[in-house]
Length: 165
Image (tube, rainbow, N blue to C red; front, side, top):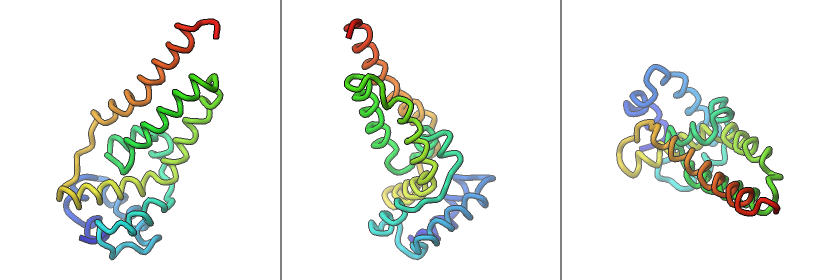
């Protein structure tokens, strides 16, 4: 299956529901921008091009990782773990110097690449299983846990167990 067929397919229409027309236009412009409309969805070079394509998303900017987790966008779990690890390292070793910057970096990443990650995630799901996973609040809770729990433990260890550090 090709990217344009995936976007025009019934599964995509069902996934986005009433907002399908808007999303179809956005996703088609993504594939046209990188000239991958006629590439197979399992083509790794086309996926690489897609993941490097910038198409601004306000939802991605404001809801960041949680929007990506809800839609099961490509690499949301990896990005959550990386940012959680950076946050813990920042708390333990850098005295929270990066704390104001990390959410902004995450917002910029998903603002710039959110739609690309979403389409890549849906293409990957469809090529592997023949269907899309439904939007899930469970993944949002998992993303919250991945970000908050390690950070809370790090704050507790640094500021409660060693109060004079």
